[in-house]
Length: 256
Image (cartoon, rainbow, N blue to C red; front, side):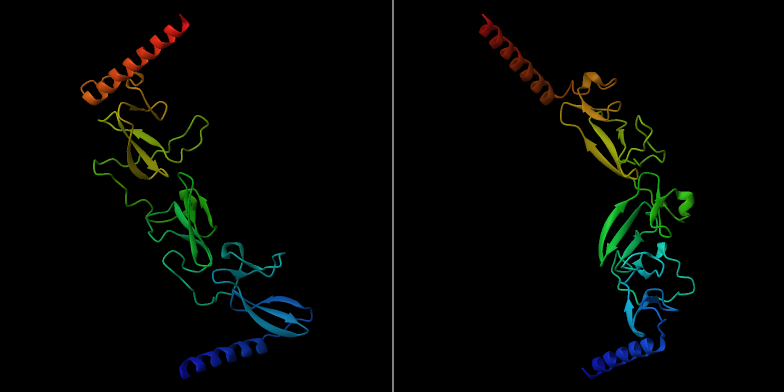
């Protein structure tokens, strides 16, 4: 109890000392600390009150906003290199900011942290997150080391091709799909172009690479006879034909 009280008193004393040491300019306003980039002073009538930006943000004396705390990549701190101690968790090294995935080989995913709550964001296909700009850029611009060294593979050995798949407009496909080499009913989806997942069409249908959808076997070259030896599918087709014939007979009877 006494130790906590002493800590509080010493912290308060340091704040008072810092405020006393900082000399306010003649004009009222907000002014940066000379050594700590996330600290500033609120000056009124020559009296300074020490303030701190939310953890992860830094003070920008030049920004034309009421709230002058901004992302570090948007502020030139110059020689003001010191920062408050971080309040971190697993995904947020500081409570606010944009941060890379904790696995250094995952370069296309980053986190937007707001007061310690992380939101996962995936870069567009082919781009990497750049901490210095807080945005997704081309890999050579990001210059990150070790990206993609851990290639994700399924049990059957499939991994997502490195070539970017584009649509008819030349835009990168976010989650490209690929046919299974041996099973017409199955196909692969590459989440964000890098994480493979095996998927399958409904029984009786096969994957059509041209349309990127499940289709009838007769519409997919090489898969026309995929279900010819499957009794369940053949019985279902026979029942469907009987139902169709019965419906046609009922329609003819109504017309007569």
